[in-house]
Image (cartoon, rainbow, N blue to C red; front, side):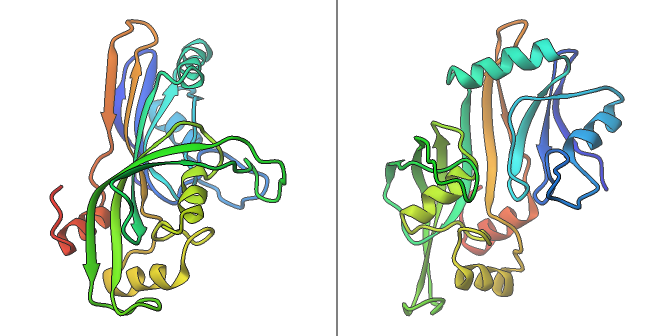
Length: 230
């Protein structure tokens, strides 16, 4: 495996770009042998302490503490809603210019107890393609900027399914016909969801820091195919 891309590092925190398809840490229900936590620890030669998580299928910006104390300070920022989180997603259909999805979701699949979940979004780009992917004669897609206000498991994926704008490449909550179209037409075999931008206060200096995900081949393919500005 290639080394993880480090976006920022000092003696207190480290920020990386997580690739799609990689689990954050070991799981008793997975046979994976490569994980972000262990890979990063081995790469920099010291322990790292998780602060937040991304699903296996989601790529983008992730921050770790380099000590339990630093991790706790940044974790508190997440809990106090002081961290700005922006995701980018490619979804089926044309979404509204902006909106809020306020719909409870469960943190674990199969758990009937749902919790409050809120997701804000803005539409960045739209396109209509002359392909009969589903029951219509053409196919519409939107590029969306997403700011989750809560942190439930697979919240973004579940919320956009709830409003019938399934994420492209989502094999759990998505639309199989549109996923197949992107596999066959554009060679895209992944979930088109990325933690695009993350802003937080440095745990020691208090300076506001913002980090942005690096460019990824699948996103470049979409932007070029649809003639969207990067």
